[in-house]
Image (cartoon, rainbow, N blue to C red; front, side, top):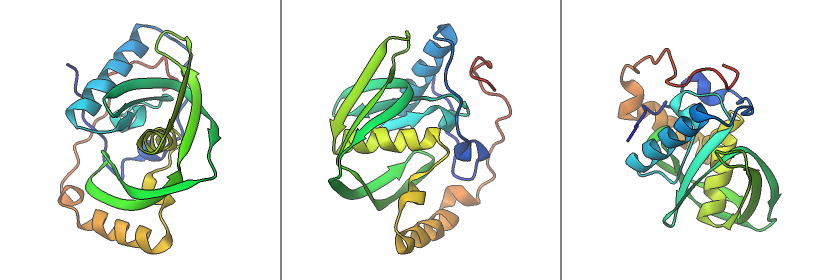
Length: 181
């Protein structure tokens, strides 16, 4: 098991758009393993590469017992029908706020071996996929909240115990730079 520290709100990598993966190799397989192991240890529904300090377009998910990943995801479809539910983030620990997202999604990309992969789902799977793809674009779920809720969320983040602690500086990613870093 390879559990990696999760970057917290305020870390600049969480606001940086990620580079597409170009090498489907052992390093990518290790990254996917690290993402999966870290996500499962943290009991998350998803985890994107920038959350562990890697600027690559990769995420993992764990919804209703289905654990998977997607490399270089592209959203092909979202339903016009929306869902509003509490949403949280492993990079904003312990806080959840009502966030509106499409009810259904279809995303395409690749698996760890470079084979085409499609993820289609609704409700929590749609929410998780869209949440993680947002991370790959430097967007956090608090950016999607209505004005009043976002204001309350930012206040809660400033007051969170973890926000007032010195954040360990992680200078080097455990993954070398085939991802353009």
